[in-house]
Image 1 (cartoon, rainbow, N blue to C red):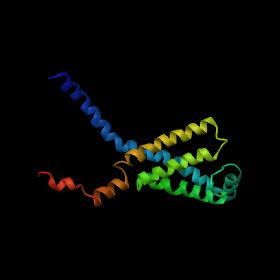
Image 2 (cartoon, one colour):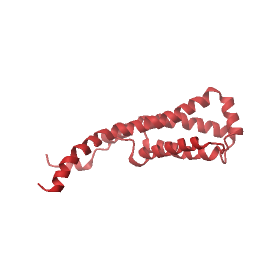
Image 3 (cartoon, rainbow, N blue to C red):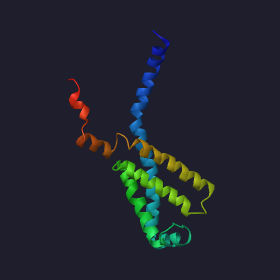
Image 4 (cartoon, rainbow, N blue to C red):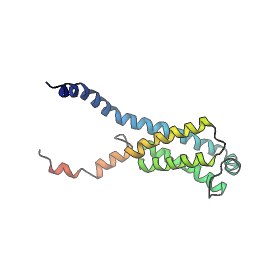
Amino acid sequence: MSLATAVDNMIRPAIRGLDFLQPLFALFVRLFVANVFWKSGLTKIQSWDTTVMLFTHEYHVPLLPPAVAAFLGTGVELVFPVLLVLGFGGRMAAAVLFVFNIIAVISYPDLNEIGVKDHLYWGILLLVPLLYGPGKLSVDCWLRRRYLPNPWRAHQPK
């Protein structure tokens, strides 16, 4: 037995284990990040007058009037986390939240160092579903399997 074969035999079970955990990790990332944005959206709808006041005096969203920015921001925080959790349009949801996250940092100049780090972490975590897709535990995966069968399956020997 060659050294390469011996190393391969030792590493292969670990790789299979990691492959098994990948869908759970993708789901965990989606749940974790979606929860952050969802809670922020819930906070905004608890007191709409306060939310509009914050967008008028604290958050300086470029190019949008404060009331429109408050409405759109709240909508993004309440709709796209749900899509992200379900993995329905998972990459699109991650992309929207990624851009929203950047706009949030730009729009709030008084954000402290810890807040910037939090947004950085959320942005990095959003790159997982954005770059790799929402994973096997998602509506996207189910729809793809159901309605877009693999064309190579028809040519495989039985």
